[in-house]
Length: 87
Image (cartoon, rainbow, N blue to C red; front, side, top):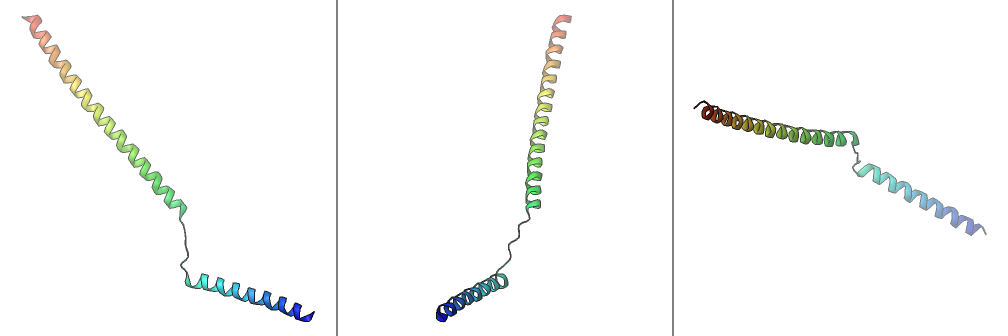
């Protein structure tokens, strides 16, 4: 009977020692992984904002170019119509 108790206690002790050694080696010899979730998301949001502002600038430039071309065309047409009407 005592041999069974002794074997159980010894087994639990061996398991506990092995587990403690395993944890010691893991914490001592491994590199701790840290994740900075705040700055990762901040960088992603900055990239999205930058991309959107670039698209808006391109759209505004495109619209400015179209407006200038339309105005030039309108002025040319009016000048041609004015010249033909005065003659």
